[in-house]
Picture 1 (tube, rainbow, N blue to C red):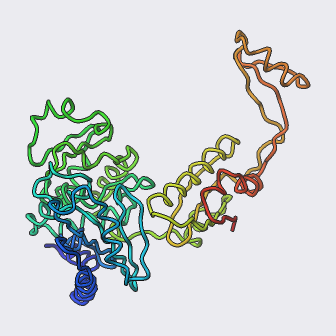
Picture 2 (picture 1 turned 90 degrees about the vertical axis):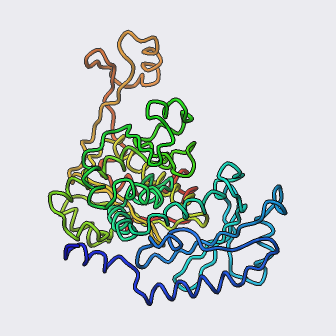
Picture 3 (picture 1 turned 45 degrees about the vertical axis):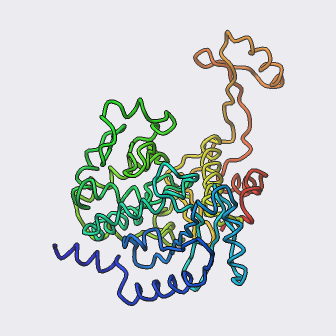
Length: 409
């Protein structure tokens, strides 16, 4: 192992002390769950030993014996068993689960059926222990998986949530196993083509995959057959943008394999001001609504996309943009500093269109003109400056419905 890789692993791997503290907290919680014919077990990246330093998410699967619990509301039964734990949040999902915050640790208690075969699953979460079991078969690659996760996390392509549309931890674990190391994966990613198909357990003959999978599962740029559930594309939520970004990052890393690729670049006001370098900068701070992280994040993403779309529709020239979210969300837009002209062209239908008369009547006080057979009028702009536009735009109902509070800073 080269020196640089050792340094990165030392930075991203939990220390023995951190592991002990997390295991103590997990064991204490496991001991509190006492339900007849149900067994609480550790799951997720902690059970797989692929978790990253500082990532204090503990997944506990409460496995209910189907012989006694099939057809019953196991979420409700789990809730009753947690009645002595006052500070807990119910998280609504395909099957409700519970979240408990303890110091810097987030503990998720997920009720599942203790099935013996994947085909017996009633809910997608019932399959989770099979994911853990499969990854644990490749424990010699734990550090390689950590490198892959840290690389993707630092570059904001980690996470399958709808507001990220990136690579889930499980997907990155599968890819690392498939390519046998982080470096081999990065080399392969740099040459990836869209519509790539990876079937690590060879469930299908390659030509039959597209035919046999549900069409809705084959729209992502990467089709990654779940090694434990052949009907599932594990990367179905991956966007083309994140696929392309991973490829670009891989190429950049191969040119200069620096540890800096594993360090998250925090979006701070000072960093953004430096990035703007004298250009017009709009900074917006929003307090998110309470709720499930994926849902809250999706609402923030909608706000960001709405801002971006309407800045462009109003002819403001966007140079750079982005957003980040911890306790509060920070949106930024870097624009051309020049004010827009007082007058603008407002376009209508083509000269030979049947709706031309409607356009004429609507704007009868304006002089109708044509440009390449397209009608238009010259009218005053409502906003010449992007900041003035945004000051009013953040008050729109579309935005107010998706955040608790919002302001320009």
